[in-house]
Amino acid sequence: MDTSGAQEYDRLQELKTFDETKAGVKGLVDSGLQKIPQIFVRPAEELAKDLNYKRAQIEVPVIDLGDLEKTHRHKQIVEEVRIASETWGFFQVVNHGISLNVLNEILDAIQKFNEQDVEEKKKYYTWDNTGRVRFNSNFDLFTSRTASWRDTLAISFSDPDQINSDDLPDLCRKSVIEYSKPVSNLGNILFGLLSEALGLEPEHLRNMDCSEGHRFSCHYYPACPEPELTLGTVKHSDLGFLTILLQNQIDGLQIFFQNQWVDVQPIRGALVTNIGDLLQLVSNGKFRSNKHRVVANRLGPRISIACFFSGPINMDKVFYSPIKELITEENPPVYKEVLLSDYMTKFFTVGLDENFLVNYCKG
Ligand code: OGA
Ligand code: NI
Image 1 (cartoon, rainbow, N blue to C red):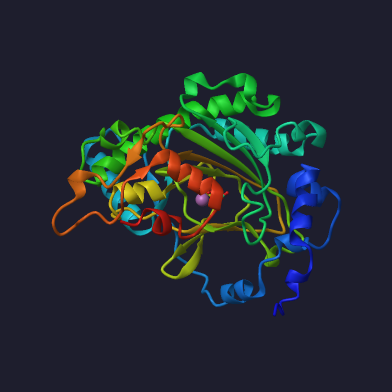
Image 2: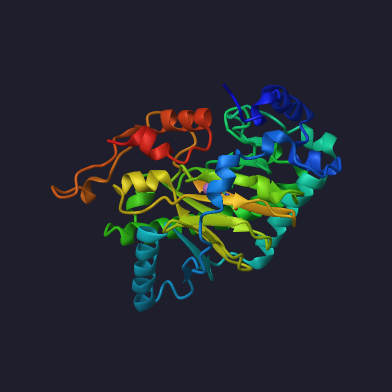
């Protein structure tokens, strides 16, 4: 017998009604609602469990990439990257070479895209995961247990020099193009440092095409009237190799570390970098793809732009498995080989799942 009460409403119908508006969470907020709809309310047992966690006063490592080309500093940076990647799976980078102006412009443009006339925005609303530019709210709306308080514009491209700019929405075309190039460069630099931190040649991860594909998720988290009842993004780890995340000054990102939720304080001009599931896989578990989430906030909008590096976008017959140089008798492979296209299809089918890697790739 279902005694939860919360299940008595017609969830599927409410999801459909919400989806059909094509206006996302921003549309709900604009309608002036004071209580969040039931589809966004987390189950009572989940809310209760959350109350038990301590709030940590520790901070995610910050790595200064200035002077990277100076030999003594380079070594130290590789060491800092190694320690952060083996423990937190997260670090913030400063002095990364991308100007504050370029960062502010893209944050601004994503805000404008979301706050434009809804009829214009609806033109981009789609569930077709193969499209290069897609707007929707909760890509896993119909599979997740609880909907999240966020809308997302997703943009994917292979080479920043060959972005098909005609596909990009007018309001963010220029700033997306201007950000794509330096963030792609930074990805290449980080893959070099990560390779060295694994004791490999700097080219190793780049030669595996880890830095090839770029998938932007531009998130818009509207102010929420009941933030304690929902989440902006549920607990998950990222599926690709590496994520570079730009966030505005409204906080919300939390990392699950040493059994507690740690807030990632926004630092102006800094970029949050984290190891994804595929890098955990190819590093045979040496680097950690850590769980994280975004809490909802009474203040808003929170805007964040995640650039996921998850291997080639056109990915016929691309396989990934633990790097053989990292395998020894004492350190046998803990993950099996995955076919990238299957792995991606699985991800889009199951949605954000906090145990994705364990469930689908364990050897
Ligand atoms: C993600 C993510 C965090 C944020 O897109 O995978 O974790 O701050 N985003 O939006
Ligand atoms: Ni994430």
